[in-house]
Length: 384
Image (cartoon, rainbow, N blue to C red):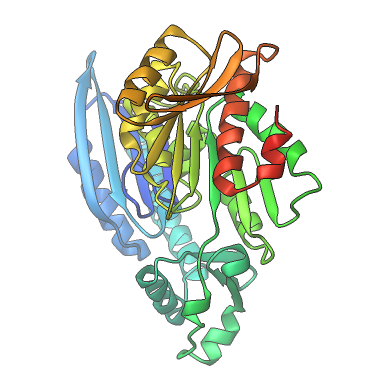
């Protein structure tokens, strides 16, 4: 009887399972062993000293095999993934009478690693306080921690807290920073490249990072001079790891690549893209949606803030914008090579974009709206 892992995601940030760290597992088996897997997972998690909750199991028969999907919430997703891998190896060894496999040794090694990485109680108490204040607690490594982001953060040594368990930072002085997001594929890359040239010398307190992820987030947000972050996100990274932040202030979804081979369900791909919009919830947030593509246009339903439609002049895009304008919404679009912005019945000609390819046009439209939203009037004037 066969069993193998189709996908295994340790989700550190807000994700399609939960806004908390979580695990998403997909197995393929010749037998319906979902209940056995969940029972063993819970038992081993308890032995290793892990907390898991909100466990959901779904088993589906496919062409004589079984697809077993399991999701759960846990503060230590990487450890739960390690247990899942251990269970698959255990099952395979039992089915093949492999006496060389030692489950107890593997469990002991996980327990040992868990003890080495256990977070001290005073830090856990600070973590609970951070949740109350809606602030992130970042592990910077080497015993260093940070509450808040960028210029609105406070950094401290773990030893400092262990020596004074009653330690409390000045919570009122801490906060987040504006995060502007470009999600997509080629148009996203065009946008980040153009932004890089615009801000190369003008704004040292702004960082631009494409292919943003959790590892880069800890580096970028640890800069205590940082006032704003402009980041490019890939759908694959959101699906695999979750979002590397909890809130953004600007989000442009310009194009979507086809689901990656590791994505077993296209709905998961779509929801991962929508998550970036759903968490674009900062005060005065703005969303930008490419109306030319039916897939990106459908993501507008995830937006909880004002949503501006953009188009390079396709029939579908201009039709969607016409409907949006009838509802009083804003739009920025190209028609016969000319750039216009509009709201309701009002329409204003801004310039000429006939020399730019559609992907470049999408990038420029999103950048124009970002610069307008951020108040960079001087840079906006130099964009076209």
